[in-house]
Length: 215
Image (cartoon, rainbow, N blue to C red; front, top):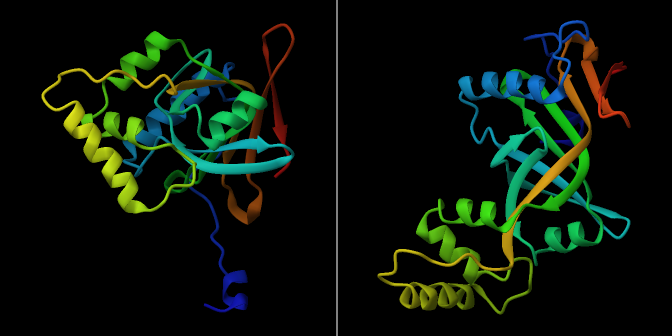
């Protein structure tokens, strides 16, 4: 594919529209409406979201998986000693982005991330497949390692250590974060790039201010 053919790639969006007079007054209610529509649409990895953090003044992004949400925010799990964990410990400001191309929709969330309580992390950890639990112990996430064989050896040693045991303890360096939003934007693709963008901004009173943004 040539550079010129890349520039020619385009798609006109026309599936739905979004009007500020029709959205829910609370962004979590609006998120739930879109979430339920997305799950019914059988989107692959519907809970995949881009997490952006700050490494000093350099932004870094990667895909993580949403594992729950409520009026406090959006929850994901990771190694606290990973690059993203260390960055969130230094600067909890972050953003999340969902892109559901099948529905021509994006949801952008800006807020701050804080570790969830240990009991909630324990509950989720023990709901994971045994292999994933072992992987949380075996992998020093984001650190440089000697080679693939070294990682496989760490995993095999842990398999032997916990063989026959019904419960594997959660690593103290592994758990959940909740991103508490200060702003949530819902984006609906529209024809001629006249996209609908509805922004919810949290005010000091705790109420949400709803505004339309130009595409």
